[in-house]
View 1 (cartoon, helix red, strand yellow):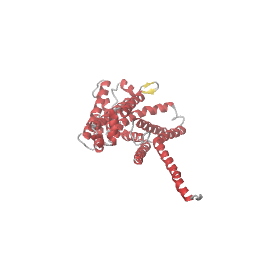
View 2: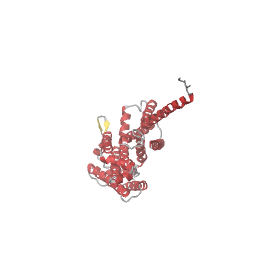
View 3: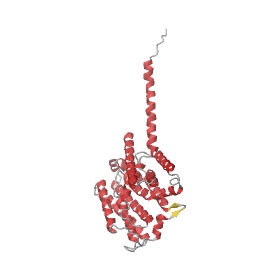
View 4: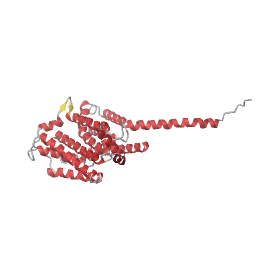
Length: 344
């Protein structure tokens, strides 16, 4: 004879509760990942909308957008150079001083009051100087094994002082050929030449990091230096190459800045150090969170320039822009670190 066993409500609750409890955490995890990957993009869109609503006749115009793209090119180029060392978990804090020195050198070389060589020769020599100084940093860090953080701070001070000494702390305006000025101030298809120069460098940086063995090795070195060494990677060569690329990028940025200005200011690059790192760290908090990338850095540079332009249109002062840039850097670092910790 069959006996009906009454159902146990408590047992049913124990069986159904896990499914009910796993759904909300799963949704929260999905939301966290979406916000971590695309949150910065959303913030950029919101920021753009706010500036457009506040000053539609001044900000939401083709001229302003083209100006943002033009002005962010030197910053983006410097930030892309930094991205290569950040990928390998290194730092180069000399980039501001190196930009200042290279920007000064290129004008001094072509000015008849100093050296007076052809502007193309001056550009080539400046690029070689940037590479050589980046190589010096790389050798001191990778082969002499000096700490990158302290060393590059010191070298940045040396570079800045050298630029000031060359021109006796004075700006140089005389004897700059128009052909050199046209490199940055000229335009093509309605956009500044700087936009196309920056785009070419962005494509090169992206291809190197994402589609070459050297780029993959750099990411491997940054992820686990000891494993990279044991696997036979040429760690010191890779690290040195990263600093060389910083030097090259700094030289290009310095040339573009003074080409647009048509003068040599020995303090040109000092103010780019913080924004360059802010752009790189901001870029690491989007797409693949916690991972530095060329595309992320480019978007970060555009965002910072957009904020600077928007605040200028709103008649806010330079110190306010600097404070906001610093706050963005802090927030980007926090997002990147939190994401890494969560993924671990």
